Amino acid sequence: AQDRGPPLEDTPSAMKLTSRILVVLALGASLGDAVKWNLRKSRLGTKMAVRHESLLFARTKAKMRAGASEKLVENMKIVHKTAYWGQMSLGTPPQPFKVIFDTGSGNLIVPAADCSVPGCGPHKKYNSKTSTSSSFVTNEKGEGSSEITFGTGQISGDFYKDKLCIGEQLCFDANFIAADKMTTEPFQEIPFDGIMGLGFKDLSMGNGFNIVDDLQTSMGTGNGQFSFYVTDGEDSEVTFGGYRAERLASDIVWAPVKVESWWQVAIDDITFNNMPKNLCNGQCQVAVDTGTSMLAGPSELVDKLSRMVNAKEDCSNFDELPNLGFQIGNTVLNLRPDDYMDKSAAGCSFSLMALDVPPPKGPVFIFGDPFLRRFVTIYDRSKPAVGFAVARHNGTDKASASEVIARIGGDLPSATNSSSKSEAANPLAVSLHLDAGAIGGAQAAAAPTTPPVPTPMPAWRARLEQARERSRLWREGSFVQKPRQHAESELFSVKLYRERK
Image (cartoon, rainbow, N blue to C red):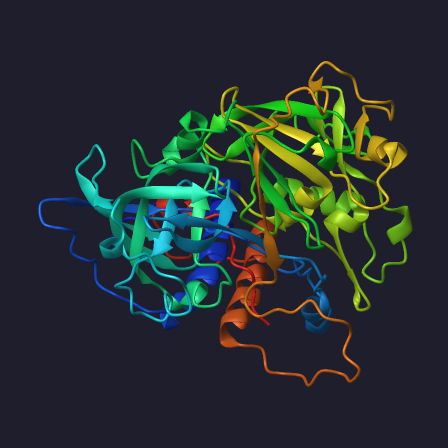
C-alpha cells in the first residue's frame, strides 16, 4: 500500500487541501453520467497535448451555512444573466459560431464536423474540408491534438489554422482546436457553440495559439486593448481595439497584471464603506474573469468576510450592510450589497463562494459577472494591465459613480493610477454585441402564479451539498475521515459549473 504520510487532519494546510479536493470531487461527480471515451489517437506522426484547464461561467448558489434549511438554499436564485456570448467566424467562406469570450482560459475551441457525440449535437460545427484557407498545424512540441479536462467536462480535438473574423473589419489567421469529442455535461446544454479564451499565453496550446497576442498584432487592434460592458439588458458588448467612452461613467483606474495567466491584479486591502480592514497585508489578488458568473475567494477570507458582514438570513439588516470594497492604492472599487448578496423572498445569503486556488496563481479572488455588471473592464496586453471604470447604466450619474469608485475614507479618487475615460479611446475599435442568458435551462421569468411542485433533490446535487458540509466540518476540525489523495493538478480546475434546476 502507498505510504500516505501523517494523518491529513493533523495540519491546517491539510484541511484546506481536503476542502479543495471535496469541492472538485463533488462538482466533477456528474461526469460519471457523461460521455466517456478512451484517449483518442492523435494524427500520424504528431503528439497529443493533455491539459487540465479551468472551466467557464461558473455559478453556484449561496453557500449553505450549518443549520440552514434546504428550502432557503433552493430559493436563492437571483435573476441575472449568467453567460454572455457573441458571434465570430472561421474559414473561407466564413462559418459562423457563437462563442463565450473568456479571460480565464487561453484557447479557441469549436466543435468539429466529425463530432457525433451528444455534447456536440446542438452546435454549429467547423468543417475544415469546405474551407479553402484551412490547414492542419502542430505546436512547437510537435503536438497536433489536445485533450482538455475542465472542472466539469472534457473535450478532445485536432489543431487547425484558419481565417478568423470578429465582425467584418477584424480578421486574422488563428490556430485553434476543432473538438471531435465533447462530454454531454456541460456542453450539450450551453447556448453557445464554443470558447474563445482571452487569457495569457501560458494558458494556450503553444506558440501561435494565443488569441490575445494575435489581436495585438492584427489589423485594427491598435494598442492591444479589449473591453467588456455587460448588463442584465440587451446592450452588452465586447470591444476589440479599445473601449467605448460613452459606456464609462468615471475615469479609468489601472492596475498592473501581477501574474500573466489569468488577468490577475493585486489589491492592497478589503474595505467596508471605504475603510480598510487590514485583511490582506498586501497579499490579496483578484482575477477578473469574463467566463464565470460567480464571486469567489480564499476560504479563510470568505468565511471571515461573511462573519464581518453579518447579514441576517431574514434580510432584516440588508439596508444597513456596507459597501464591500477592494483597495488599489488610494482608490476603492466598491460592490454594493445587491452585488455580493443573494436576496429573494426566501431570505438573504452572502454570495461569495469559498474557493482555494493553489500557488502560484492562488490564493486569489475570482470576480465574474456581478463585478462585471458594476464595472467596465479594459484589458491592455501592451502594459499589461486591467482598467476599471464605473459602467454607465440607466440612472448612473456622477454622484452614484463616485460611490462605486471612491477614495480611502470616502473622498474622490486620486488621479495617480487613473486616466481620462476618453484619453485612449480608439475610433477604429470593433464592438460586438453580446447575447446573454441563463445556463442549463434556468429561466429569468416573473414569479409563477402558482407554487412550483417540489421535486426530489437530484443525486448529483445531494453529493454537492454533502461535500459542502464535509468541507465545513473539515475547517472546524470535527471531521476525521481520511479522504483519498489526489493529484495536485486536479486542484487547478477552479471554475464551478452552474447548478441546474
